[in-house]
Image 1 (cartoon, one colour):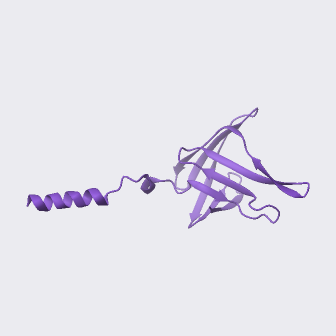
Image 2: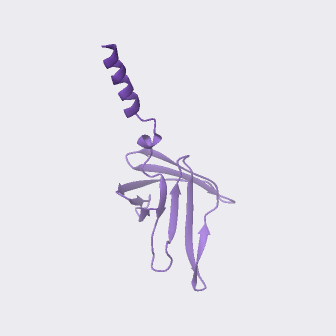
Image 3: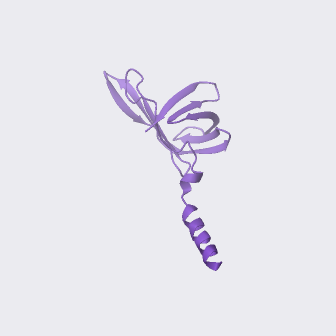
Length: 125
């Protein structure tokens, strides 16, 4: 009987994973806005596991696409509930901005709807 319990406990230990991916927020990762007809990609956003946020965009200047990195003093995100997130950031010399946005994730596609109702579509990269 002890042998059966030992086998069950051993099996449970190996089937239970301590992998944090099981609890990983689906928004975490790098997302590309894709080709805007001028620059490809037009923007890349990255939601980091430590709740920081990064943004790289492209500007079309003098006939070429120039990468523009958004520089923040800080930029964080938080999952409020049910696909609603909060984003707080501050650019140097500007006031802090806090806003909410809604998300819909379907497979490898992330749709972000800002508080003005504007939709942005990104693909996981």
